[in-house]
Image (cartoon, rainbow, N blue to C red; front, side, top):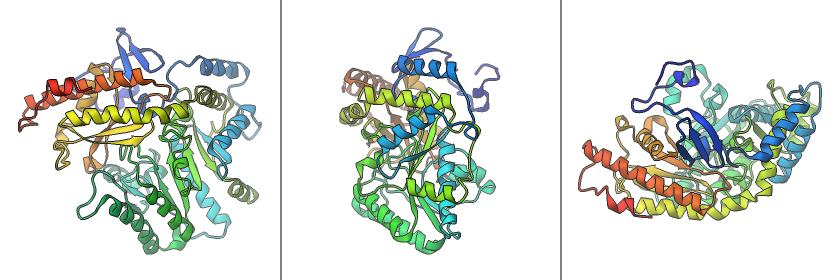
Length: 466
């Protein structure tokens, strides 16, 4: 990487390639300074839900900027804030009718944790402070959000600086512990939550937070409806608030505005949104809470939490314009329609690729798990850095993906595929074609280095599978 003061200087430089300079972006595509075009197959880090350069949103930004860019919540009420709150309440549905806006997902997670604590405090349940979460999981980069994140690598580094919260089993659908059926492991994961509550003391447990569709910790993991229903019953039985982290899966990406809407009997108490809510046009997050709990806290003196840019007019007007486009273009319905088509494309690739072990997800939030051995589900050694290889090769094919591993790779590695919600079949086909070419090149590279052996055929079979 060239020597400069850009943010990339804080991160480990790739030994293989310098990052290109972005020149412009439109729809699902980005162009670098050389004129090369890239397909945004993961919407950045699953953010640009409506694509780049939407003229209606750009116009709304300019219109609000010409009127008022900032007004403190302590001094003024903003039409944009009120309108966005009302629109979100309508889209989220009854029980999530009050919106607290932030500048992103980590801030919104912090807001949900502190709001839950204040609810318990006002109710006289002042011993409740433990927020249970899953291992692995990811809920944000601030210390409060990291305390409920399940990641051994993060814990090793930042653990001494934060108060660790209890963790419970994650209901995996691919790497199921030995001795369990898929259904049995879902039941065991839910039972682990209740056993942990009883062990910690129900009177000390405040909330349970989970990603209903996995993000960068579990790669689009979707559990069974029975699991979500069981979790809801357990939280209700012991007086815990159930928090859904929909930073990645919300705002229509799953084929419903909230992924919570897929499981009607597992309704969360609090929902956190971000990423697709601002869709890359503005930093925006939100905590959605029920009116009765907000009124309870407000009557006791108000929410003891806030940030400088909370609910600023420019951000709220931008978020409102994004939601206008989501509704105008029927993008939630489009995500529901295209989800099975994307899944089928990825499954065709898996059928012909020796390094793809699983395809999972819902709507336009999908992932493929990368393995060294499909039969044993054995991951690649860490030093192979398989997802970094795939991301590098994808860029060579003009494809931008989102590749991750957590907890030192203990739970596997995956590539997220989440195109903008206004994608069509042609775009999905282009993504599939580029992805299969990238994976073929990766297999060839691994064979040449002796990392893969045993008669793996890297060539024509995968190249012509779709």
